[in-house]
Image (cartoon, rainbow, N blue to C red; front, side, top):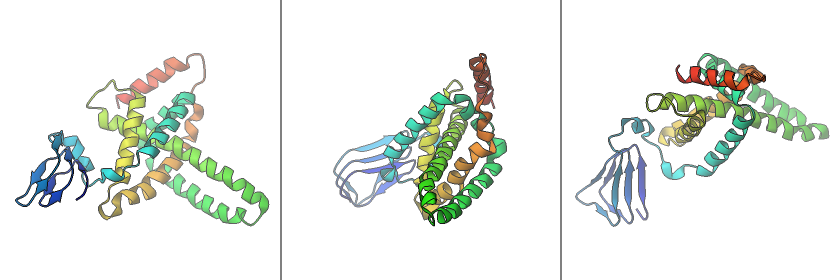
Length: 231
């Protein structure tokens, strides 16, 4: 291997030549009889059990650019409609199957409408707005879903963790799932479950009803978020 070797939540066994550093995050590095490592050997957090859920992930292919873009868009949405985002995350347990169904219906309708719209000039002009609508639904849904996932993962680590950190952690985990390379399981889960669920989540929650935009909004929101964290 010409270059560095990195593994996330997996052990590394070297029985050949590695012209670089070998680093295992959440695992161990073992050098065989014929193993030769020219660089440094690092084992980071090999005893941390939660990291083992990411076994089989190819971290080298992780798209940090898309993660950064999704985080920025999520922060913007959260800054505009925080109650809506939290409300959708809060109801995810009860809305998962409905969200998945709505997502597939919207995707199939969008594919059908795309073919119909390409027949006319007006339809071609409408297409970008259709795709923009799908994208907004997806970002809304994936932001709420990320908060839900982040909350579930961190609930036993730090009960006072903020919703924004939950969102960032959740988005990172979704990216990790997408990059599970074994038998293309990651891509399959991302395309067939996560994507339609994210698109359908805002619709199954009626866009979160846009919360309670009254003078008591901040108080109501804090109450809902504290209640959500304790679930």
